[in-house]
Image 1 (cartoon, rainbow, N blue to C red):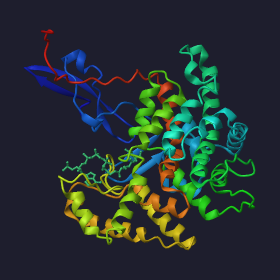
Image 2: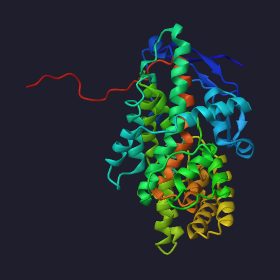
Image 3: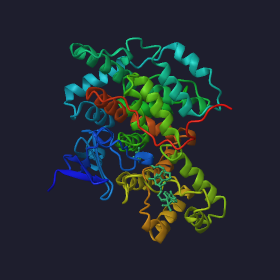
Length: 431
Ligand code: SDX
């Protein structure tokens, strides 16, 4: 099997090496393309472009496979907690009991939020979208954590000091982001803000932060906690998606972890990305209120002249079922059944899925339900307001962003700076 490719142009032949990953994926290494040929590539949306070599997450879009550090998400959902998956993604291995206990202890130590951050939080209007609030507060964390990784030294000798700074920033983020997220939910519901409780594990604490009511004894609902644990694991990482690539490229300029993740939160907010879980419910409600006229909306989605898209369908990588959607669909049935909830939009979602999967348009374009198609229905059943759906996605994605940022920094990636093809006016003078 050849280990290089040749480009022949104007009778000149240029050779470029083929590199191969651990799952036999192949890439043409074009690092020398411009210096050898003077050419660049053109690939809007980077659909065919790899910008890093990563050991964290493996996706097989054709076969609907998703693994974190080699473990399938199916097995991780059945056998691990979300905090163990955080540890796996960030440090490369599942933690021993001692490592997990220390990780939880270090996170608990950081579970207070500076009262000035609460003042910033209260300065936002009640109508502010939680994703905008959280992107701002995550960036504000830089001001309250002066020894943050903006000052990571480039010197090799500073590695152990850098590791300590990065570990501290990691536990700070994992400790404070759930509190800040719960504050946005409690503000929407008009509930007083609360703080973490050490009597719970990581995901139990997230449920407590979101759902505990004042002057009422808090009774944990294990159905809710187990559903949250699986949902957060399923959202924990997804290789080089839009928001993760944003985190990596912002960090590549040597901006710090908090600043990079604040940018990632903003990227995730978009309705083509993490904001799709909110857009799916809005779409299902629209269809329900239009006499559940599903065929009308499937036809709109197929009409090239109509901007309407079937939200929650299609994916850049998965040209088969998104493995997460399969697990979430099963969990949706389970949670609604266990909670005794009958949500009419679930029936509409299932009917849309069965019609689309048998429609030539969706079949030819390989459009299947993705992670966002059913997740909003579960969040709604858990009593989470619709504006919070993408926040729950972000809560899950925090460890993936940290892991990818750490890998980018440790591999000394060059600053991200794509090229362009200029097509504007040629040189001209002011008349
Ligand atoms: C996430 O990348 C990740 O890993 C993301 C994510 C993660 O975990 O980080 O998995 C999370 O973002 C999931 C995706 C959530 N977004 C949505 O559900 C929004 C609806 N889906 C689409 O907008 C779209 O499918 C994307 C954005 C997800 C992917 O878009 P691509 O890869 O750029 O593909 P495209 O827009 O070029 O579409 C290819 C064709 C087009 O038709 P043609 O121009 O070829 O005729 O398929 C059509 C599109 O019009 N198409 C759809 C469609 N999605 C694609 N037609 C109708 N409804 C849709 N949903």
